[in-house]
Length: 114
Length: 116
Image 1 (cartoon, one colour):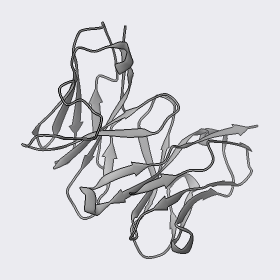
Image 2 (cartoon, helix red, strand yellow):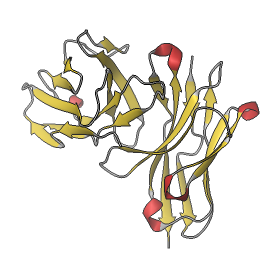
Image 3 (cartoon, helix red, strand yellow):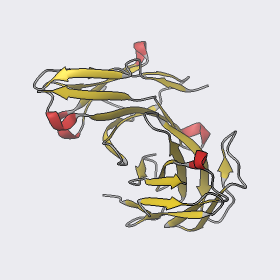
């Protein structure tokens, strides 16, 4: 069965520091991979996605993610975190053979300290 | 870009009553819509998948008689929580898929349901 793992439940970083949020997936073929951000009480905003091609994808708000097939990972990175980046981050996998159903990770809560 | 709206954004209802949540795709036609439930500090749990003009497909453990889903048009899906109880209080999020090869889904802003 497909699954998405975000090992870090909560991360705290200082403003201006670099950030990496981990995501691992379990799926037989190359899935479609997404990162979403959710502010408190809000819906999900797409940060970036990977379908194929270049394994390093750029997203909005200065985020990027790298697909590593050998590690079944799709980690999200940002070189310099801003206080407004504090939110909940979800990694998601889309499997086309199950009716385009998303599988979400459990999320990583990011706190940014001044 | 594709926009999905939900109405209402917040609703409080009394135990035993029913409440309807609407999900609309504003600038595209959604062949498939999805309903998710999110508990505090937790991830999104897929409740059901609805295709326009057909019955919704519910995930295991989701009561179809309690969570009625109707996808009457290509731009509107509704979720009705029937005979609501306090344990139904949650954040409900819908998403819509255009049916294109991009496989991307567009998420609504969510509806906070509180059952008293």
